[in-house]
Length: 531
Image 1: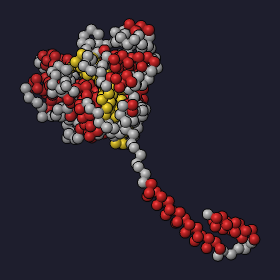
Image 2 (image 1 turned 90 degrees about the horizontal axis):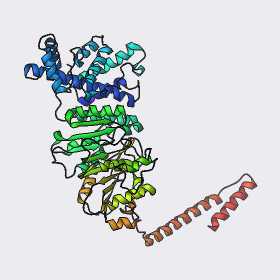
Image 3 (image 1 turned 120 degrees about the vertical axis):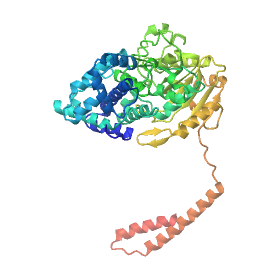
Image 4 (image 1 turned 135 degrees about the horizontal axis):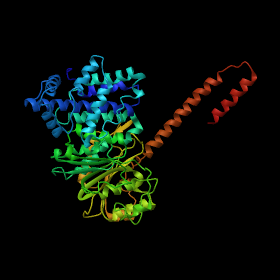
């Protein structure tokens, strides 16, 4: 195996092979899929060697050789059974990354073998169904003709050889994968809204949702618009028992759903703790037949999306207790919010990112908001800087919700100025994130930053939650020193008069070749003398 280089550097070098052949939204699928395949293959060989020798191999070549030998012996069936039980998949010796890398280095790479490896993994367990469906090894985007297409894939395989995915410590691999997803989001722009929440808002949202639940063992986290599962996985960073967290997530886009599944594995989440589904969150409620209430609900849904708002939803348990009103067809924001809130445990916390319109729009949205406030369900509203997200430049807010709490006060935080500008996006750095959490946890009024509004304040504002109504960030105009201003005017007038006199003296000394020029200057001199 090649000497292990900096993991991020190696993984990003794989992107360089594909960049230019297709846009980032497409080549991310190839790179992230091949990285995941290498991880599964390398993990498989390492596990096989351990089962055979009760020790770790020095390198993957050693593990490959040992595996090839046992596969030709009478012990093969027993080993495959143990591997299937522990890893949920098996690979033939010529389906491993090490075997396919050899072919690539010897210029005899065969796409059929790699495709067979993908198929074997997908067919091994329901857990892996359709996982590599988007990695089209026969796409014209890889090049024109079989030879160029094969050469492109082989080149990525060779580049990834420098990445040691087995001996990385802790969450290094998962974080590297997360970094790649973030880099692709930056390159992809608007399309990134489907799969990625930028670091700043994600950290604020997850830290808030986890507050008070850090030590809970067996915590259940839910994200019905999970994208690449980044938000749910961020909750691990704030848990004292991260290995026991159970994740429940749903995603509409099949390719993004596959990305979330890969992301889970690369963060070391056990299969039994992954409960992910490909489906439409609003049209069909899920989950309904297993756990339906969760400790933590995190959401960054598509903003002001269209949905059916069909009459039948008025009898849906998620939406039926809000005055017979549904979120409007052209703005599903409250439909997403109420879906998440329905699935929140009585003791849990929900945090959702939405456009500011949910704070003040009227009609059906106004009725829903009023009922939520009357029930004490809205706990805090945090205004974020504009241009934070890849799919929109509009300012957004985080709405925090809780069930059956004492009191109906709402904390407002204006964090709109807590950012630095980097390239195309505004970015919240650690000190900005920490300040928001400090204001949130203190839950007190701080001039120009936060306001703890009593329920009566909110009623007086007709249930309008627009942040400037509560947090006044206007800067007072500085007082004008009139005495100094008069003195400046006098000095300016004196200077103008002196300059005019100098100009007059110069113009009177002029000589002229014709009468018209002399008359024009004479008139100009009269004007200056009158000033």
